[in-house]
Length: 184
Image (tube, rainbow, N blue to C red; front, side, top):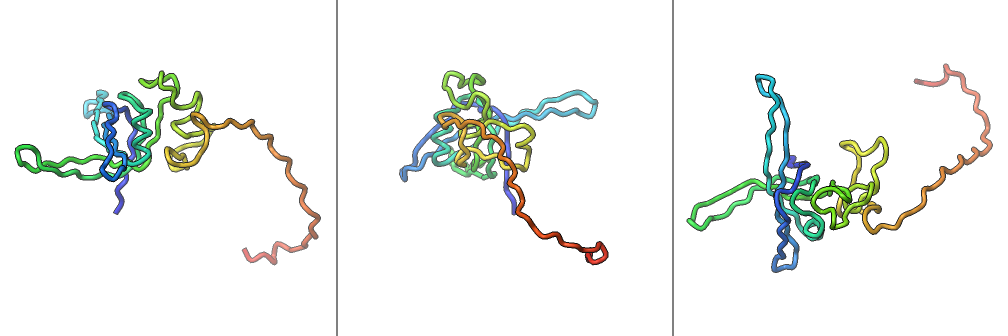
């Protein structure tokens, strides 16, 4: 079976960070996503979904440090069912997303964390290099927190490299083959 969720939206509240007795970090928050569509009469409609999510480990600590209510994020994870018994003894449940990859989409000077100084002036989220022309579409490797990409806040800058000159090909003997000899 396949269980994958990809969401882009804004945080509905500040990240709530806790530590389990084992010492593992756990962060909970919510995200709001919008969908714009035309109804049967042709009128534009907006639909907003509010989804809770959970982040574990070092990603949870980074989310708590850099994200605030209103921050734009991309979440990749899986849908999970949380079940518990409320104060009245009734069984309750809800779906939420367990995040496996979190990418901050705000840039420095944008969004609610502008005084926090996260992101890079023209770069992607935490630990991301600056976007390149013509790349980064869906299905292409993009990275995110926890993937060693370089770039982003505090990363050493390197001067642009000059394209190297093509190496001359060594002298190879010429092969004389008729097109009729090629089997395809």
